Every structure is written in structure tokens, then in C-alpha cells.
Image 1 (cartoon, helix red, strand yellow):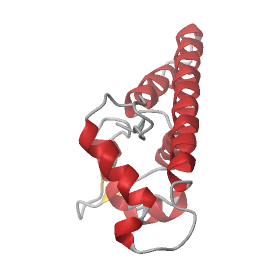
Image 2: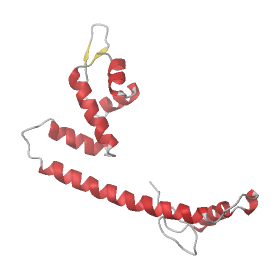
Image 3: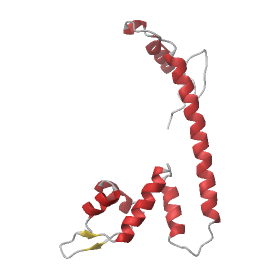
Image 4: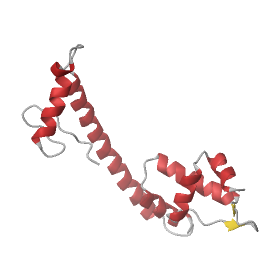
Length: 151
């Protein structure tokens, strides 16, 4: 199949497929006489695996490591377990950060409960005050909002 067919079959943009190839996640396909990429069912299966891992918010490095183990089925999967445990830890941290962000946004939202002129908007004033204070990310000081979403 050509790259457009692979893209359609996997619901993946062509540029993403090419990116995964450049990153070494997808093996380079054979070429036809007309120099078109020719993909096999194994490419589709691998692409679906990559997309599923990315859907689980795994980094490209984590996906690369999982593919390395997948490509060596006789290897011990202890490192796969460790990788997933570490990823779960990252997800737990991110959930905590997002909950803190949600609390901060709700606190900010309470600063302006009704429609008024923008120069009297409590939300805009709160955002401006927080932006000017330069307090470290993820902290609260003087009752102003701090961002935990710094990455």
C-alpha cells in the first residue's frame, strides 16, 4: 500500500508517518519502481501500536523503548514493567498538577461573577497581578494565582 493508504487505514496524517520514520520508530518501507513507498501490513500494525502508545501519553522515547522490546520477543519484560511504572508515576504527577490548575482557575473565576466592563474584571486584574509578581511556578503568594502548567 502507498503512504496515503496507510494514512487512511490508520487515521494518521502522512506527515506524522514520515515523522515517525525520521525518528526511527517506523522502518523505512521498500520502494516501487516509480520510487513510491510501499508499505506492508506489518507497517500498519506497528503504526497502530505507536499511535496507541501515544494515545496513552507516552513520549517518543518511551515508545521507542517499548518497540525495542517488541522487536526482541525473547527478551525479559522486566524493563517494560519498570517503564510503565515510571509512566504511571508521571501521569499521577500530571493529574495532581492539573487538579491544582483546576483549583486555581476556579479561584480565578470567582473573582468575576457577573458581566461588567473589562477594566473592572476581576479575572483580568488577577491575571495581570499574577503575571507581574514573578513568583515561582506552582506556588501561591499574596492570594494571587500561579501557573502549574509550565511545560
